[in-house]
Structure formats: C-alpha cells, structure tokens
Image (cartoon, rainbow, N blue to C red; front, top):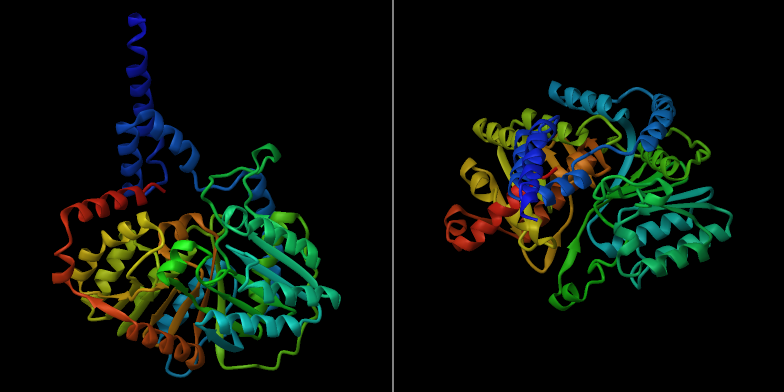
Length: 480
C-alpha cells in the first residue's frame, strides 16, 4: 500500500494546477481567488463544489429555447411603442439610464400608467383578490415562493372563482423554494383542484435532462390580469411569518412592497411572464384582448428583466448607472446587501460628490451566512460616509428599491448582492414621474421612522469572534 502513497498528493497537485487555468476564466478576481483558495485548502471538496456551483450558464436546451423566444419578445416590445421620456426639467442623465435599460432588457419606458404601492400584506392580498375577481380572460401568477396557507387561501379561492367563470389561470413557482417549503404538497393539490395550469420554474430533474447549477433560481414575482393590470415587487405569496415556528414565536414578520401597475407597462410584465411560461412548458400563451390606450395615470414605467438568459448583469448595470448619475440623494433598500467592487466604487464616488446616501437593511436577517457577509461591509460603508440604517426588530425588511434624486426609482425583486446580479432571474421596474417617486419617498420616510442609524463607534465595539465570522462569510459569498 505504501508504494501508492504518492497517488493522493499527485492528484491534489493536478487538481490545483488545472484549477489555476480553469477557475479564473471569465470571473472577477475576488471570485476566482475565493474558489482557488478553497481548492488549494480542500482540493477534492473544492473541485466537486466548483463543478456543481461554478457555472452561471443555463443548460444548452434552455438556451436554445431562449434564443427561439427572443425575437417574439422583441416584436412584442416594439408593438408597445417608443420610449416615453420624462419631460419638463428632467436632466439628460435620466434619458441615458432609460436608454441603457432599454438596450439591456429590451423594453421601452411607457407613459400613462397608474401605480399603487402596498406595504402591508393585508392590503396587498386584498388588492390582488379584488383584481382577480374582475378578471375576464386570463390571470398569470408567478412567485419565487408560492404557498397555500391560512393567509393566502383567499387568493387561491379567488383563482378558483376565476376558473369557474372560464378565465384561464397560469401559475409558475420556483422549483426549489416552492417545492420543498412547508405546505408545498398542499399547494399542489390546491392548484389542481382550482383548475389552474401550473409548472415549476427551473426544476432539478436530472433524469429528464433538467439539471443546471442548483442555486440558479427564478426569483421573480409577477401577477398579470387581462391586458391592463399587473403586480410586481418583493412579496412572495405566503404568510408574512413564512410559516416558521421560530419567527412566529419571536413575532418576526417580513416587510414587503407590492407595486400595482395599471396601464401599458402591465403588458411588459405580461411579456416577461409569457417568456418564463414558454421556457418551462414549451407553450406560447395567447395574448389577452388589447385595451384602450387612454392614459390611466402619470407614471412612466419600464420593465427590466435580468438573469442568466439576458444581457450580463443587466440589473447591476442599471443600478450602477443610477449611482454614477446621482447628484443629491440616493436611498437604497435591500435585505441582502453584499456589494461587489464596482458598486463599492460607485458608492464611494457618489459620497465624494457630496451625494447623501441612505442604506436600509434589516437589524436581524433570516439567513445567517448572508447576514454576516453583509455585516462585513458595514465598517467600509460607514467610513465612506454612507448613512446606514437598521430596520428594527421584529420586522424583517424584505423590500428592494433604489431612489435617486427624486427623479428615478428602481423597484422589484432584485437584491443588492451577486446572487441577484449573476444567478437569479429577477425583474425590476424603472419608474419616473411624481406619482411613483412620491409613493416611494413616503415608503422611505416610513422605513426611516422604523429604523435606527448605525454609527462607527457602535460598530467598532463588536466582539472579535463576530468580526472573524463576518469576514469568513464575506469570503464564501465570493464563491459565484
């Protein structure tokens, strides 16, 4: 046996040498260094994890479907018309950001939308039910987490009433988050009973040829009703305790935002849903009857889809463009804030231009590793001059938006971390006009009243062990 004692060290050396050539390819330096460090320390474990998690790409069959549907989506976007840009005294940079978002996501900014923001789950569900009960042709429902529980059962009942009227109901839910969460089996039974057509998104079924990096997920939240009403935002369709015993005992509740859009931008959200539906089922959805183009409101809205199937990191590029153009005031709300180097530089440069930056995160997170990873950036952000606010317990801030100079807002499902930028399929609404900007400003003021500001002196008093854990999680967060 001793004559073969050289085999293991040689294999480890081969793995490390090969990794030096393979891992850095098309990766950021920080991600490449993190992977290489893991492989050097634990060669066999590291290479297995790299093979499972090291690729951002979707399977070839999925990419072929996306290539096939892309011309259809472009044609649908062209039918919506040319981008409507904010007028009046809007600075030129607004046009630049809108044009960038159009090139990246394929959707124009459209005028004539009426918007409403709901920040309480009771109001959000009541609004959804009311609109579903008025549906005449089709209701499309897409959530990362979709569960039939005591809180959400009235929505399922409304969907059942809709199918009884002859309304077509299509439902998409993430193949990992919704399948394995408590209540998943009950939800499937309920969907079959109410007569909906439904499918999982990005299911992991290797025997059927459906396999990709396991943590590539569809994180979008979209509801569209007929041809003129749509919803999107941060809310999942589940009780705001997420049906966890620990959160119920502690009184913790998720705090979300749901944006209701009535007008032409609703058809952009419907186009994103139709794309996902085709990719999962192979079926092209029939378009609902067009509605009158009479303006419903003053808001200008532009839908920006992002994910592995779209232009690389399109949501990150839009966020960076907003930060680079900011001149007075930026508000960032994100439950998971783990920035990359580009975002840190953009924040630093904005502060240097005397831009006031407010960042809102949760005082208590629901993912320990992410909570520690984002905490590792607090010292650096505070040193820059970023105003850091911790949303007080027992609320868990889950809303996601950026507001810049009271000119543009970006609101949707995307967090400010590399998972949302590189791995997740997300959807963001870029909006302008006093109606939407004012609503977001009111929400930001509410969050400010429910948060406490973190100062450098307090943060410096953390125990050394906690700092070490923060830095370790920061390292693992780079394994993209």
